[in-house]
Amino acid sequence: MNGTTLHIPTLETERLILRAPRLSDLDAYAAFCASPRSAGVGGPFSRAQALDRMSALIGQWHLWGYGRWMVTETATGNALGVVGLFYREDWPEPEIAWSVFDVAEGRGIALEAAFASRAYAYDVLGWNTVVSCMMADNTRSIALAKRMGATPEAPIQHPEFGKMLVWRHPSPDQLENGGMEAYA
Image (cartoon, rainbow, N blue to C red; front, side, top):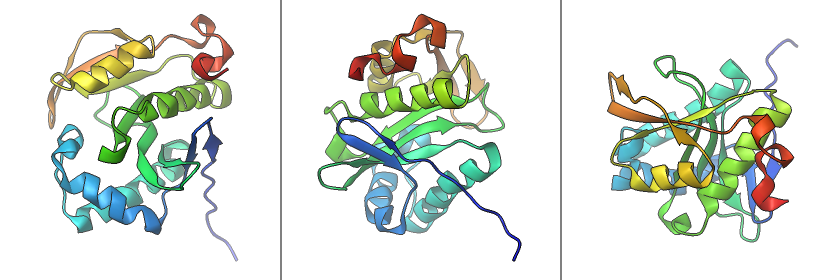
């Protein structure tokens, strides 16, 4: 039988597992998509749209060879957010993107998962640069980009999201331990 095999790697950090989305994650993801928190990614969305978006998370791995992971808590297995490498055709370049669910807010979950994503981009994929894009009023994402050592570049005008800030992450040679220095 012929077909396509899709491999989505699993990453582990001190507190987290970054893995392929599962249907069992849909309730948590749909709750995020229906909430005002999803405004930064174009929401809110219906449950049906959330399922389509979750399917697209998996599809990015097939199309680009990288994508975003469902971030889960090692201790409980609970879904906490979606973090990883993302690219849209109308984006300036691939980015590290993060969206955390209410339950994960203020716990350093996005930071830990974003560090793991950046390390994967540099150490596994061989990238030498990466950005993060965010809406200009997303103060929490701006703070996270700063904590990761990213620096602002000229904003872009996106046809769907309007003015977006672009933050450039340090290159691999500017980092120790492939970007996981906070967890070494």
